Image (cartoon, rainbow, N blue to C red; front, top):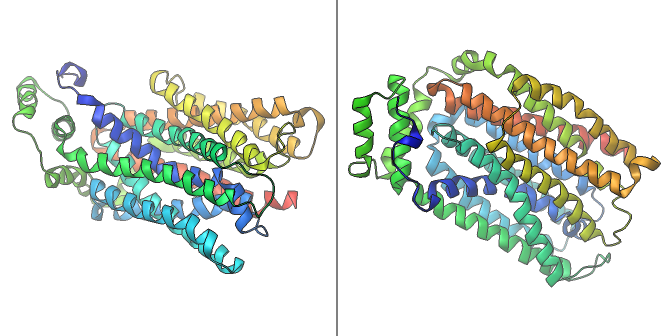
Length: 431
C-alpha cells in the first residue's frame, strides 16, 4: 500500500492544514473569549458569581449538542454545517458585548448574557462535532492539528486581551469605561479569527489536496487498502478530481449512512473506547473542577489589578495547554493505559488548588500556584490529545469519523460534569 506521504501530492501553501488549525481555534474561541473577559462581565453583572457560572452555561449545552449530533449527524453535512454555525457564532459574538453594555436593567442584562452564552455554546457543539468528524475522515494527523488549534485559540485570545488592556487600561472600578472599550477591541479580534475560519472552510472543498485526501479515504475505506492500480488513479487526482462542493459533502456523509444506526456503531467500537474515552472524561472533570473558578480564588498576591490577574492566570494555563498539544503531535508517548495512570496521579495537582484556595501557606505561595497552573494546563492538553489520537488511529477506516465524534462527546461530558460540580458544589465552599 502506497503511503500518503509517498504519493507526491502537496498541501500547497498548507491551506488544508491551516483550515483545520483555524477550525480548532474557532472551536474554543467562544469559551476562551468568555473566560478571558470575566472581569468585563463582572462589571456588568456584579451581583452574579460569573467565575463559577460561566463553566456550566458554556459546557452543558455543548455536551447536549454533541449528543444530538451523534444521533442526527447524517442530516448535517460536515462542511456546510461548519460554515453556517461559524457564521452564527460570529454574529452572536458581536452582539454579546453590545447588549451587555447598553441594556439598562441588570436583571435583563444577565438574562440576555445567560441565554446568549447557552446558544453560542449549543451551536458551537454542533460545529465542533462536524469539525472533528471531518478531520477524522481524513488520513494524516488532522485530528491532532484540530486539537492544536483548540489550544492555540487560548494563546491568541490571551494576546488579544493583553493588547486591549494595554490600549484601554482598567482599574478595579466598576464604572471605568475602558472595560467596554477593551471588550469591543478584544471581541473584534476574535471575530476576525472566525472570519478567517469561514473563508478557509468555504475554500476547502475546492482545494486539490483536500480532494486527493477524500479520494484516498474513499478508496481505502471501501477496499481496505490501496493497490498499485489504484495508486495510478490517485496520482491522476490533480487532473480529474472531485472539485465541487457537492462531491465533497457526499464523501462526508457516506461514512455516516453506511451503518444501520448510531447505537450499532457505538456498540461496535465501545470496547476500544473504554480506556481512552473514559480516561478523557476523567481528565476534563479534573480540569473543570478547578478551572477557572478555583484557580481565580485568592488570585496572585503580586498583582493588584483584577483584569491583569485574570489575564495572567488564564494565559499561563492556555500557554501550557497549547505547548503540550503541539508536542503531542510529534511525541505521542502515552497510550491509553499509561495516560489513565498519569491522569490518576494528576489528582495531586487538582488537590493543590483547593489547598491554595483555603490559604494553606505553602500552596498559597505565588510561585507554587504558578507552577501548578502550568502543570494542570500541560497535563490537560497532552494527556487528552494522546487519548484522542490513539483512539482515532486505532479505529478501523470505516469507524474513524464516528470514533472522532464519540471522543468529542466523552471530552465534553467530562467538561460538563466538572463544570456542574464546580458551579453547584465547589463554588459554595468559597461563599
